Length: 539
Image (tube, rainbow, N blue to C red):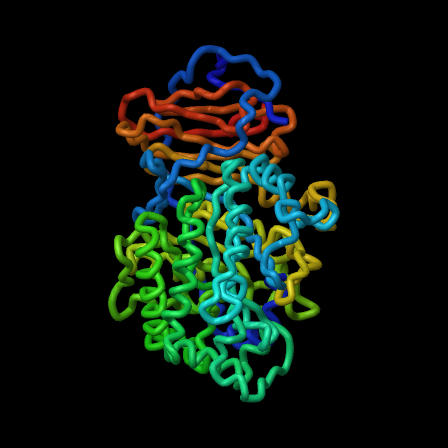
């Protein structure tokens, strides 16, 4: 620290794919707003942060906080085994075509065809993207009744092991869109269609096919638990959790992606939502979670509301009684997308005047649903486009609400129900990371706390400011000896960064460390941390 009190260091659509029909139906319920902001604490008097440390080249080689599971949901926050509050900034990685795992050198594919390998794990860790929502599809797990494909589970586990070597967490996601390939989607195996002799009334691509009679019928069968479909779904999840439970980087099981409410979907558009349908959704997820708990008693269970909650519709899970999962430890996994922007040819997501209000209402709804069910909220899908203004909306709101997030999607990945030409981080999946979309990376690779040894009060990264200012206020928990860790991405601080610490704490990381560490000094009181580009005036 210099005489000025500064510690110096150097650094070095899925939205579009939603379609016009669903978005138009939801426009009427997307107009109200809810301003979701984090609370702010008053600054405490500045205190020294240690002896002078000169600016210099990058220090510690670590780029993401070491994994410290098992993780547990504790009210608004997830905590690691030390009791620190942890935050994840991640990406989705879901290969939706047979064999439902991405081509990879891990599986013997040539480097030129590999879509996920050592390069990707290294890129994610270096950028502070410290988690992956990894799609593990029922169609891959159980292609025929009672026939579990262990080779598939081994492939997916090997991706988890690769990520673990780079301290990147894994959220296992039972992904589906539009039920199965029979309905121009993916996820569920075809044998789960109980009336396979009935003509499938497909009309169009995702998501418009959700509105067809045959799509409603197959989902109604599922919600009615015909032929014990819930138990079959639970059984495949038991195999998945058995295969992944001892991964050191497992952060949760996401029970079902965007469950469609079947023929009840029109009722779900009403302001009060659909209490009866959400009760069925709750019952199914409780049934599945109980099976997982027989295999794994500690890993968080991530549950979801219906597809329509991603557009600001109310989530009524727990309206009749709170969610019941053995041992608790639950996270509400929710998505947030624009309603019209990106669908109409004259209106982008960035230009959609309702988009910000929809995101705010979606987040507010999720916070209420999570609190009602004793769960921690986390955004597991957003973006799905190159619309940077919309990406910034969500990442800023996530900071204000102090929530983890997962961007959709890592790559184009030949997504049959997505927007592969715009959703990924690369211009060409075969050229990674060389074809990285730099502006998109700037929006997603952010300064943020990966682990807080205490209670977070506020944090935020201001990417639009020339000084790339990051602020955080927290109250240290003196029972936790571990340090607070902030990821400071070198791409935003090419000439280095300055750190100001006010309150009973001191900087302990080496100059130039990508992981900025702050330790409590033992006194009580709030701590405020400010990071900004080196040499810029303190605001």
